[in-house]
Length: 197
Image 1 (cartoon, helix red, strand yellow):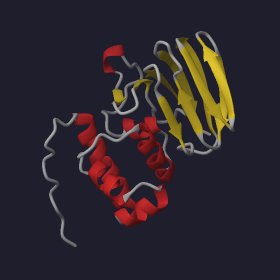
Image 2 (cartoon, helix red, strand yellow):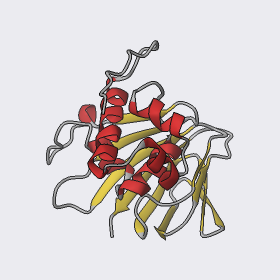
Image 3 (cartoon, helix red, strand yellow):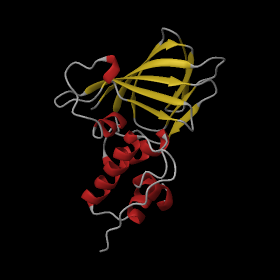
Image 4 (tube, one colour):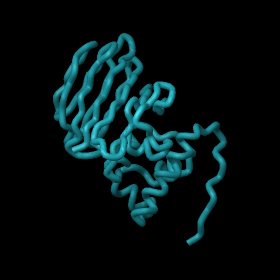
């Protein structure tokens, strides 16, 4: 089998995207899957997967969610695998930030996954009008606590929409599709506590 060196992308590539691309390729290789097989398992086109694994595109939150489901990881677990080993104390300046520019979603891993711990904390920011739909949880039965710090957020789970305002907290286990929508007029900022089953 011929091994090809990926061509250098023509755009400025974020170092996190480069490490993420390499990790996605490693995860597929560890399972011995072709791009076609991964496309079939994830429902993502072969060309999109290829571009993501070569850092030709910055993956969206929805794409990463599908791949996390296939690989049995939370998004934070996947992102932590491309960062340095997390320390017990995570200073604000050291908290990894990832942005889905296409959807207006910014994700700060406040308390990244750590060996021996099942929980993690994420700060999410959605721009007004942002709408992110996940077709499945990355890990079925994932426990989530969504605490709104600023703005408003509409979260749909199990076909029920919950409208949340500053101070509200939604607690749920995720088994199926979910949707996070920021109705505006301003953006929304929230804490997401995630506990793996």
